[in-house]
Image (tube, one colour):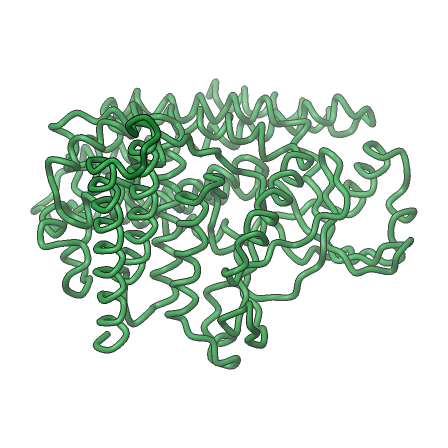
Length: 518
């Protein structure tokens, strides 16, 4: 009864605040509704789980089925809440959708729609933001501005437009205006909700997720930084020239507005488009692997940390001398990047080669170097990185066709240990986890004939190159009196070359084996 009276009083208060024509009062009313919606959804979910867990079941199969239904109900409830609240709550849902190694599939499959189907902001709010941020009306910038967005994401939406001065067709990325008003309270609520999970499920500590989200949002909400990221990564790949990647040209940026070249393309996992344009899914998968391994293990070490399906397009292109494939991968949304330290890059490369070669001694050493993982947890760490059960890794990660039995068996005990591990690893490793998982999900959606085997072969070649360069750097720094013809130096130099080309040749032969025999 008390709850009902309180709810009635709050409802009347909110209606009054909406009736007042003063903006601060309106925002207070909206914030109250958003807060109540989130808290009530969390309460319903916690109660649903409590009742399901505490119920009696005839057998284990019945309990598992009941838990699956509970997961689905709670995920759908949460999805509805996140969609209505919008903003960073959509971002939270996107994070959840990519955490297949951690949370039940009922949750990840329900949240996946948030990757590229998000609520849009009204054109009136967009026009007001243009006026507030630039001092000029939107019409002063554009001859034409399509009021219907071509894409809507968690933090922004994109409109097609024609520039007034040049007549050039452009894509206009605008931040959702409401984010500025609600960001502080939304971040606070996210922390509280994720923190409260520990009260009901003490073994789950998800505060690292809210901390990472808060840290990342500071980057993603500044479109001037996004413009710098896009320009930097575009220059890097233009310098190399051997990749079928395209980054749209940046034309102009403000903190909440970004104008760039308009690109026509489709989602990278659009099988019908690839079939119609004779584009090989195997080649798309391989090129995607090359692109992101170059970001991680290349000279620049600057990684795009949000490669979900909504941020990658594909477009058909005629083959040229420089473009070896009949397609280009268009990389969008450059708001979230991380600079990978050189020491981490080298240890990470050695970790991956130790996994590929199934060298447990090195796996223990480099798990500790990249994330401070103790010897008793390295099995869990390598399983989480690869998305495969450690027992199957022992058979070699590049042997035998991938099947469901090789994947991680996600038990309650596994999840509890993984949550504890993620709470302790460095933040950069959380982003590498996320990037790995998103790329693995994309590769699975392409349904290649090779499975993940070829991508591991490509990864191995990049790791071998990093280790070769590290070995050379160490050798040059220890050279005797600058005498390159010293027998000891020369022998070590030849050994470095032999190790590198042996690894390269082995992986090259493996790729050809896959090409011939599948």
